[in-house]
Image 1 (cartoon, one colour):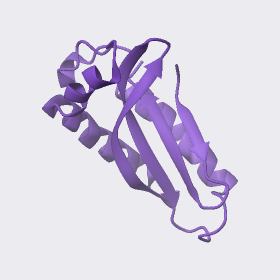
Image 2 (cartoon, helix red, strand yellow):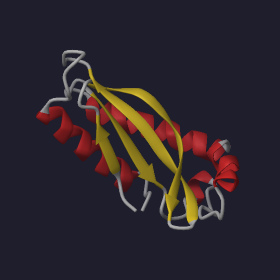
Image 3 (tube, helix red, strand yellow):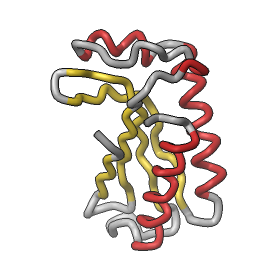
Image 4 (tube, one colour):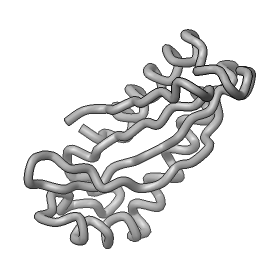
Length: 126
């Protein structure tokens, strides 16, 4: 399970899913593998996860400066890996300088891929 980026062909947006693949004790996210999606919900509602979202937002905004990228939405995700479910980050990024009905530019796509990988590494998601 790795980073999933889905680009919208009709808008300058893309969604990014970043699953949490290892425990994050700094955010009180210890038991990340759960048998059902319902068991992930308490993790997504925890203060530790909210702190993780705040950190992700700060990192994204710092790295996106100069790339015309902004966060349109940042929230939790329930990521499935076979029969296991785990929490993850889900964000929608928008290229602010692109026409509304056009896909994200190649430069913005590259920047978004780099930023997603940086988020994975800096937040120790796995």
